[in-house]
Image (tube, rainbow, N blue to C red; front, side):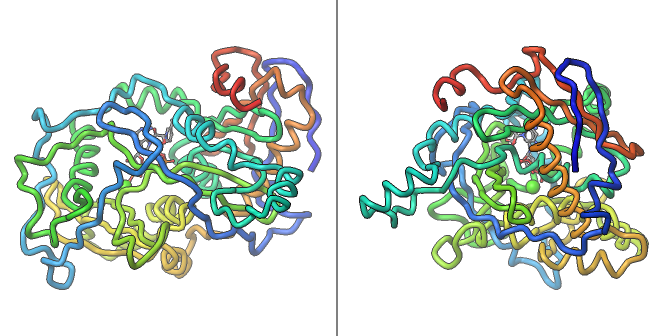
Length: 402
Ligand code: 0WD
Ligand code: CA
């Protein structure tokens, strides 16, 4: 693919969706993505402060008090809402890629070029597990990759991504679209409550290391449960897309099963809530639409298990079910007109390639590239921006990394 680009701001050009789904004119059947390996981790504490450790990692509490998936005791997801036990992160603070950049600075010595490797070998410390490899082609959040990957089947939410290049690495950071900002500003009380239901479920299903409660029936008393959405445990992964794009990305991980038996990411579990199915049609629609994002999100982090609390309309979880991430595409593909994973991966591979090619054609040190897509668009558009407000790589980062 070749793109001709003018080096001026406000220049908008298009990448056709059709071409991003094809390889040499053929729809590609399979695009290879290496199983992600965890290369690091960090935590954000109750005040959203960065710590280069796993202090915020929580453990998964198996919901054993269930019979055929049905809980013996309903979980009230409304518990703690509008109480001092719910501490909400200030969403007005735009963090962009900041915490990932902090992690990169902490780990910059672990990214070594070929020549360095040679030296390292000579010094016989090549077994040092800490070395990650050459600097990656891309650094971003896992959530960004999820959005890009799901584009071929998305019909509700658009996206906009700012891309900046420093040395040989492209950094990607989401830009809030106007539609998303409007949606957030006009969100109803019920939508806010429903968002809380998701985090409250996480509170029920997790406990603090080192000594977690044994099962759901002996969990922490409600009055002691604090839900603070500043807190997060993030794992950093590295993978290679179609053998040609090395990618490093951070992902917020909900919880972890025993690390003695399984190692990351096999021990990680993603938690979700969903409305209970009351008809076969609803269940089909779940596999046809909703589970695409579940699959993409967990697949990108190599997380094998997604545990879902099925709730009623009043926010009471009646049953809990485990889904195998790798099984979700099989279920979806039995349905007519559904998504398929290879189209997602082919699209991602081609889009990453297009981003690289755009950067080869521009004076990279001076501009940001903004890629955007809206539902219904047949193309991903991009523009070059010289505006400082679009730059998200801070001076402290550039100085430290160059
Ligand atoms: O700058 C931004 N707009 C973004 C920032 C977009 C995406 C992520 N982030 C940051 C957030 O600060 C968050 O700490 O990345 C972190 C999460 O990274 P991720 O794993 O790449 O995000 P994603 O896979 O989209 O979501 C994982 C979880 C979500 O769980 P559910 O089950 O709802 O998918 O991270 C949470 C949420 O709990 N989450 C966020 N938390 C705070 N702010 C955000 C956000 N913007 N997005 C997702
Ligand atoms: Ca979750």
